[in-house]
Image 1 (tube, rainbow, N blue to C red):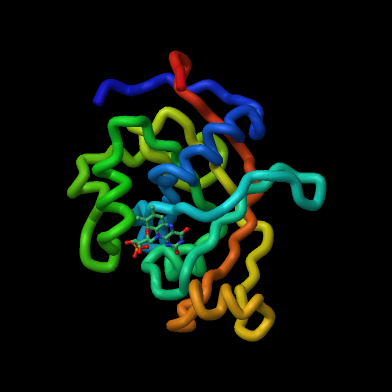
Image 2 (cartoon, rainbow, N blue to C red; image 1 turned 30 degrees about the vertical axis):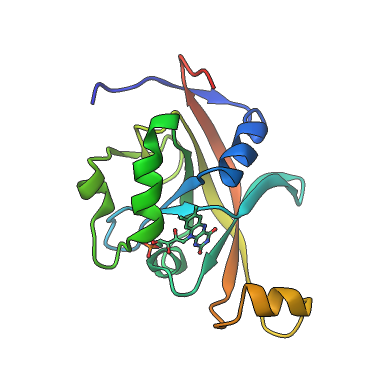
Length: 177
Ligand SMILES: Cc1cc2nc3c(=O)[nH]c(=O)nc-3n(C[C@H](O)[C@H](O)[C@H](O)COP(=O)(O)O)c2cc1C
């Protein structure tokens, strides 16, 4: 792919698109462990906002995911916003595991080093956020509304919440939604 030019944006500039994508199709969470092999996973839950006076993205990752292992081994991640024509990427990254498949290779995605952090973004995505993990906490048993317990955590495959300070938000210079 021809190298794209990204420009730095305000962390809150794409908050509407961020939420729309979470609701319809998902976003791509990219992480890597000590082997430096990036892996992308589709996410449908998370949020962007302010915490400790910092711009943050919170992602929710179940313990069973390969991404969970990678994030436990890392201090950074990126959240990449796919374009409309990337629904196949969202399908594959939301159903196959990086444990058994190199999703970047299978999908012909271009892994690029982030601008500020030692994280990786997907060049085919028009917007990405590079985040530094500043806090993480397990969603634990016993403090939920019973409905949540039955519907979401029946198998006890709990999420961990990762709070990433947004260190950089970048969009392609010709971005249009
Ligand atoms: C639309 C969609 C949204 C998803 N959202 C999440 C999520 O927010 N958190 C999560 O742990 N898994 C989520 N998943 C499931 C993972 O993307 C899926 O299990 C994936 O294969 C895990 O990849 P990995 O093992 O390489 O980490 C979602 C899947 C889809 C299709």
